[in-house]
Image 1: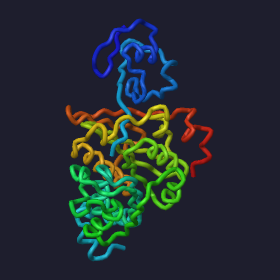
Image 2 (image 1 turned 120 degrees about the horizontal axis):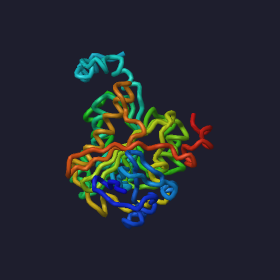
Image 3 (image 1 turned 90 degrees about the vertical axis):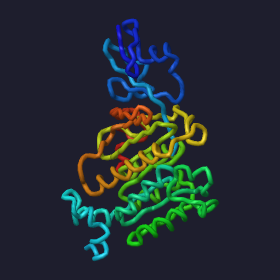
Image 4 (image 1 turned 90 degrees about the horizontal axis):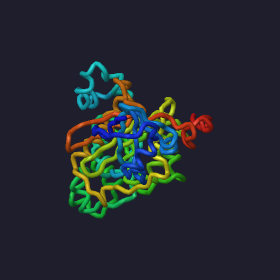
Length: 66
Length: 254
């Protein structure tokens, strides 16, 4: 199945979790935040969410500067 | 009532149907706490002072450093090594002597924030570190005060407005304690107008909130990519287990 990550296409095995996708992309690291279809997903939920074809994933970083 | 001087000073507000005399009086009667008087807090404080917000609490523990002058528009070479809070107050009094300003020359933390948050109608988070950001979020939820958060590094900005009375998530739902502060202006750099843009938007949303104008994007994280000049909007849902805004702590809100 195909999803988009920051507007780029990505092929995933059906049934892949959000956590699994992040691990595959080596993005399951501190400072990374994620939104699924324009809704932020708390880190505690990453492993519980199974992705669907067509999902839009946004990866962004926590920033604290001011 | 507005004075004759105030009618002249705020005439461009008074011309606006959405603000008018009633809106200007709401600004005059409002108190806002600005935590952090750097690249975000400088323009935010300048625009809120100019707009006639009646009482500004200006908090920063730091001294002005020469590396601040690239983006922190409140200061000049005469300010070097002076207190940011005191300098900001002096500069802003030159801009608008009609309003009251209190300089807080100390680092606010979980123990001290509550005393100040309790005094104001709205808080702007213009700080530069995650620990203080979490403490401000918790204090605003404990006291039921709206919070407008800004952050910027490099060519990126983030803006998030929160109302503890609304059903959206809070800063703790967005960034948990496991998200450490890795990126700040000191180690990553920042382009001045990016941090200025976010600070200005904090002031804009504060004025909208205080005057009841338009729609403040509550619970919506706005991501600004300055290189592409693009904005994204992400909803921040409530994390049911959140120790700050979750159900079990609902009674803490006032």
